[in-house]
Image (tube, one colour):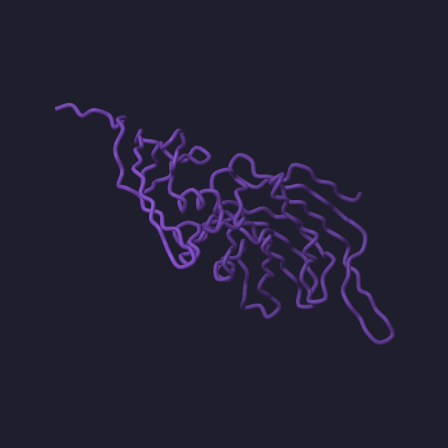
Length: 245
């Protein structure tokens, strides 16, 4: 027996909407019909699986709120008291995810001078730099000497899937002493991600020790090099690079 495609009008259960008022409440029941047409949800060429099938009602396509929000990297939550569905732009990267990340290079920790890198999120929310997923995030790994001077910097793009952070690509931003914050970390303004252009802007400044008769602190001097990093052909690459001769 040949099955007919589901393009016919199917009745849905009646929907009850409750309206609260001072001293009374009334219910409005409306019968609606919708058309199922095997509608797929596709983001950046990837089909998203969903338990609740999208349907067409009154000329509009209706899809599961949570599924659509997650696809676009938008945080959503159900407010049962109001009731309402609340949306907020961007879904923050959990600190626990950042803490568990593996380093981009292998270090010899038997050497007492070896130090763990500083980790900086280049965007506090999940992003879509590669164009393939809205659950990506960028981390800047900054390696410092025992004196607290940055000397090596990497950027890694991760994708958060099924509770795990998977490495997509890593790029070496620069090598050599660089300007530092008071705690020895690289100034956050020297490696910046622009979500509008999907580019990383990198600047390396000369290291500078600022001293007074009573104190000393780290700082940054003249600009030594700068570059722009983009995601191309499946990896992070430098598209523009300038170095002081």
